[in-house]
Image (cartoon, rainbow, N blue to C red):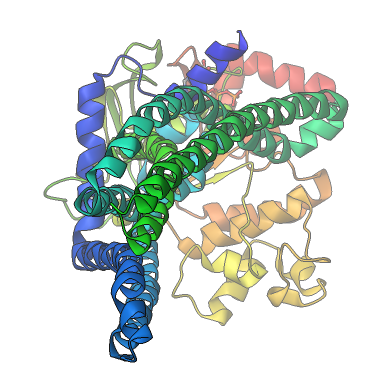
Length: 602
Ligand SMILES: Nc1ncnc2c1ncn2[C@@H]1O[C@H](COP(=O)(O)OP(=O)(O)OP(=O)(O)O)[C@@H](O)[C@H]1O
Ligand SMILES: [Mg+2]
């Protein structure tokens, strides 16, 4: 992939094939939704900005009046007019200062409020999106949606009104004042506006490219960083440090180069624009000076014209910069609104059916499943009944579809065809909370969150008492090692001394599941990190955890499998053998083969 296409692919995100107009409409709708609650504040900001520009623009007029009317009067012994000019100038400055202070506060408050709402919405939405979305999306990109993109929008919200309303207004007011005072000067200015406009157009074309490149490179840098450090174990295990460092350095270098290019463009633009401004001032001074000498123009007016001319060119470069901020904000809005438009794949039932009393009987009715609409069929047809209380082991070669069965029972995905029923109710008709309470999946990762061991066990049932938490740990045989930790159950799992071994982490997640006391328990490779003694130690605990509860166990170890009431051999998405471990060994099929291989390896 060439650099350009890689960058485009990153920037284009998931827009492939979408009509740009739909995208724009969706972004504008989002902007409207975000701004609406704060529209009062934004209106206030707009009014204050107009006030600031008015107070700014009267300054030179007051100076001209003071010089041309106040000073002659002062010379004649009347100080009133000169004093009035001084007071008026001061008053304008105070209004300007006060209004600026007020509008900066208001616009920051409004911008931050919008950002706060956006962040909450993004977080809640991204969290609600199904496992399908997260298994598809690179985490770095999801992180960019929560960090860089809202920042771009904030910049627009906080400074956009000033640029969009303030700068054009200031230019307009200034131009009107100049034309009212002396149209000849106005003409000079209008002529000089032509090269300034051409220069600005050039800057915009060039900088848009560079700014886009900068943003793309910065996003890629973030994504690369995230990927390296989420995979740091593999990075170090396979000595990928040097390769990763080189790749990261290359990305950082691209970013630096793009930034330098953009600054170089700005470095040409801004001084040139200033030069044009100064040239105009010089011309105004020259032409106006000659007219003052010939008596056509008063000195005070000339001074005001010079001040106005200087001011006229000032907002042009901030307008040009605003165009970039606007571009960044539009892109960010498009990406964020695309993420927010992403529908959770798991739809809550309109009329949830309450789970009847039961102990987790499962029925698969002609279930088939593919991870995507056009993807290969991974499961099916699967037609099997698991009576309540049965412990079922799923075995089969890697990629056979065992974890997929588990993910379907936990409703991380919906079946593509057929249905799965829990105690007689289709999973899709169950309220999500009720389903989460009824079906608990423990995986090999046994993820622990920041917080104490007790907190982590309590995730199983947040309202559990401390005694219940400890009881759960005791039941599955984790109590002894937890008590041996520096602060026992209150040990922070992420602080020093609180680090747990893989097996210990699994015991904690068993305790979590025990506390949750679900109708159906799913263990996906969950016993594979336990060494033999601890496995033996935990065997009783595991037995208590399983109890007479319905359980699906996916394990490569036959020791665990042999304890099951029933074994289902999965192959290529189908169940090819079904029976008690002893029956299957006797039948001499695949399971018998596996069993023999296991015996031989001992
Ligand atoms: N998120 C996914 N998107 C697309 N295909 C997937 C996804 N997860 C798994 N698959 C595919 O589905 C098939 C079944 O995968 P599954 O994870 O169920 O296998 P498994 O039996 O659990 O294997 P293992 O014993 O290695 O864990 C595989 O061919 C796999 O490539
Ligand atoms: Mg698996």
